[in-house]
Image 1 (cartoon, rainbow, N blue to C red):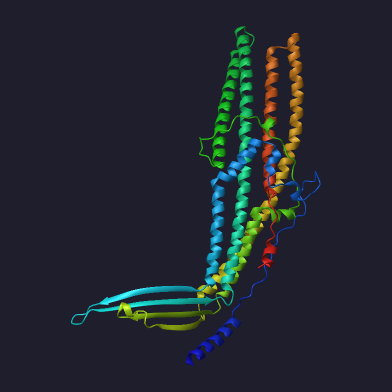
Image 2 (image 1 turned 90 degrees about the vertical axis):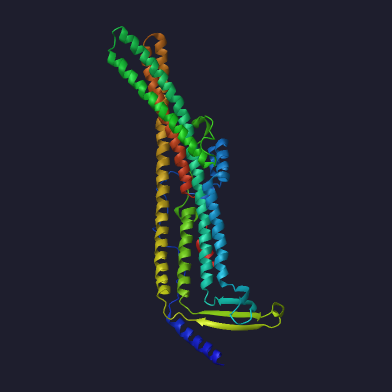
Length: 469
């Protein structure tokens, strides 16, 4: 009777304590961010991202070798494998959090051997077990489970972001290597042309037509061009090593075959999409919002930790001085208990900590969204500038080609010198190099635009997942 009265009194105290403790939690709401309804690029109609960005968007470059390298990277890159392993960890932590609401059971056995001077040798054997269950009547454990589920979804989004980063890096590095190959070829042509010009200057100097300084200046130009050629080869090797690591192959064990960028890789159409779609498609934005949701649940868990806890403990066992008599008699008991946290500064301090961490998560989300807007705007600016510059460069190369053809024809008629032909050829090669660099930059900026718009990942509605809880 006394124990029942004690439990009843404790229950009354618990109810009074609950009335004094603030455990309310506002409904989750996506952190507010500055609104953006359209991009500043108005060159084409606005369409949904799903209509323009396919999951395998890199195939739009129409290069089988690039497709093969990306497939190899997805299966062999160790960064993406590490992110996948983090998903497994987060999944296991959900089960670990859920285990806090389940009963625990212990079983033990032992023996005690004792000898006292002047007394007989004594032996005692015992066997016992205990079951304990902390009842999650307030839902504190469930809040922790929900927080861990949010972290699991955030980790999945981290993997998607890493996947998108990997595909982007493989693509741009591949483009750089092919650009280096073309630049090396063009640099060798430029070097050969300048050697021919040097031979002409050298002959003119011997005949007293130009000073020795003209010959030295041309020799110095050849030295500069040779240095640039060596630098291009070095840069090509370093980019090849970077690509090796990206596809999961030790650097030095893989070398990309020489290719020609403009012949092999085609420019795809520029994707478009509304800014509102960006918030649900970009993996980094999705991951950031899930971590805001996780912070909300952790605040709820911390508040519920201020409430009393109810435990049920059952125990049973047996003891005997003879091992053969161990199972002949048993003792068992049942003990319910209530733990009322009347004064625990650490619990209340933890509530304030989680609330402050929620503010950090919300600000991180806003920062991620603003960064996403900037990345898309910058990518659009770069792509538009690249394509406008490409038009000008193509016209420049076309016109210089006409000049070179006319100079070559005039040479046959004896109107101009061989030196003027070589000078015209050198100018044409420089313009062709600029056009090549523009093509590579255009390709890379297009990749960054696809990446900035979410790279073909489906939309994720965090709010809808909250309502399903």
